[in-house]
Image (tube, rainbow, N blue to C red):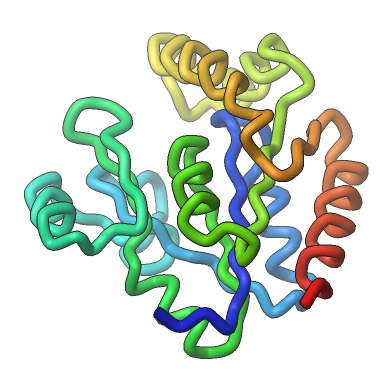
Length: 191
């Protein structure tokens, strides 16, 4: 496996602002490239295969699990899988870039264990579960039932925060971004 690039792992409960932070960092010239995850869920809105996700059928996903093609994967809901293909890390590192992962907490912990000091794991934490609920409701993309499922999952995920190298509370986006950039600079400049 090509190991020139470093790995930066972002995990957070849904709605904590992780994607916003990741998107902002990708614009800042840290030589970061986004690791596109695979999923067996249907595309939402204008999502495209190979851009936001690699969209696979549940059968294709299970076949890749059997072929050991994933760095990490999880069945989030029945027959709804998410995972990181090993080929993504190789693809990005071979260009001399650093890999950015936007993964769930279990995936983040597993990648960190696998790569140790070559990886920095960041947990983006919402200011509170109540604030998280508000953000999810304001998104307007999920039903009340789905929001309740996401909140229940978030409460479990928050317990994993101490397992990450750094926890960044996203109460103020600008400050959260600043703290994330500092952590990234320190990590990438360390030989």
